[in-house]
Amino acid sequence: MFFPKPAYFGVRNAITNYFGKAVVLRDSSGQELVRFVENGNVLLMRPGAEVVEHANWAQLGLPSETGHEFIVRNAQGNPLAVVTENGNLYLAGIVDEWPFEGGETTPAFGINQGDTRESFIDDQGNLKMLGYLLVDGIPYNLREYEDEDPYMIG
Image (cartoon, rainbow, N blue to C red):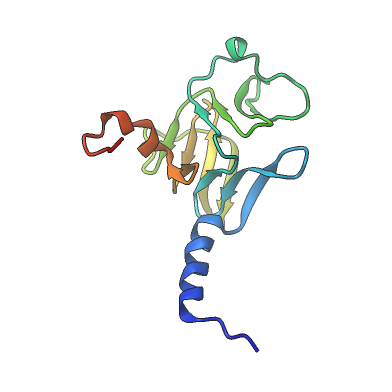
């Protein structure tokens, strides 16, 4: 008979905090692209995935309407965010981690846990969340500003 060791429960809890219950977007083969976790974290699961803020849809040729993209649109039908088949996330706005900058906005797509809105894409195309946006396992804001970090090695 197998008895889990105490370290198992610590690892399991840490994993659940990042990879708990979530709304998952998958590609056509069933592989996970993005996880909107109920604790407010958003994870881009495809290695090498990118985040593009202030996306210029015409310049990028997005959305391509191939049926292989997840598209969040506003009430007028304009794209606010696109997740492509290769796992890239394109936003009309910016990534805005907690605490949110700016005032209240209207969510176009959101993840709630009970009465708390954990993460959402607002009507301006901003991705707002109570947790972190993790890209390749690293918080997005750390990656974005690594060139400005005097302690960065490499």
